[in-house]
Image 1 (cartoon, rainbow, N blue to C red):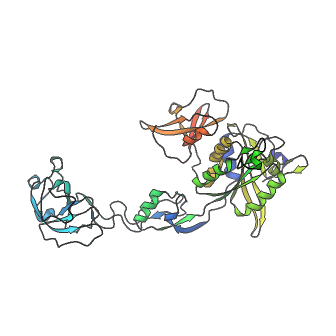
Image 2: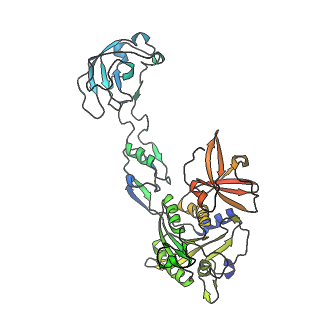
Length: 440
């Protein structure tokens, strides 16, 4: 980081959103991931460091896909389209349930009652669903004999070999890739992986993010003495950004300092060795009490700053004031440079800037997707120069992705949003917030 005092001046009031994203990515790039082996069952939301492959196939054995009766078309002399057999009577000499011992020994030319998931003997090649027979589907014991009642619509395929049978590896072959390195562990992935014998995975250790909120006015409870102070403001940025970090697999700690640059510098230096990234909120403007800019920029008045961060005012609304830098830290293992990203203090500005600039550092998708302007539904307010960022709901309508601006004051519309809508005079882009893409 340059120590040139000019580096921290607002020399360019029109830095574009994309230029700043590139600058943050370059200056605040995190160190390589540390990894560990861990049980998948407790790894929800974490990131894979290596691909996952199936250890065993799914299914592991031939099984019935239906409750019904298994037969051998060869033994019965049947074939596809055997309409004359659709009302035949069959003797039942065997009963097969999932996970239980087989009851009876099937004789050639007879049927075996079988339940869904039951292990299918190799010599049987068709399962006739119980509803296509006169058997009682709730009976505890298999009937001695059944009469087939194959539906008209099923007659041409009722005896096709393989009907209602799941073959070994039909769903997932052994060795099949389940997920790539870098993918996020989801409930669905956990279920799939465990079903094919994968119980552990190589995972990246969660990134450790320190969130420092600044401002003498901030309190966490209005009931105490501090809350009774005139002008006190309930703090919400810390828990909000902590939850946002968790969404991308990071662990966050929350800290608070007032408007004292020396106190902020001391706190940052003390917690930096235990974290991979420091995120501050507030104090990035050009006023006399903008503590973050004073601490990590040039400083104000008689208080010198560390001059380790740069600050700009972006051509973006909300959240124009931004900063980024690297904090020099000495610790037991030597010296290091800890990345810092400085966000605005307003909740809307902090939330928006976090997802645009910090989330990509934590592994979130980094590039907004361009949408045709006709796919955007927004209010008719005129667009100003630069980028206007709004909360939006993405949905699928007639095969098209539609972005609908969420209306409301301040942070409230973000509660129903699943994306950020980046509006410029000649284009519209969307950036997912990690929610599901639904319909409206």
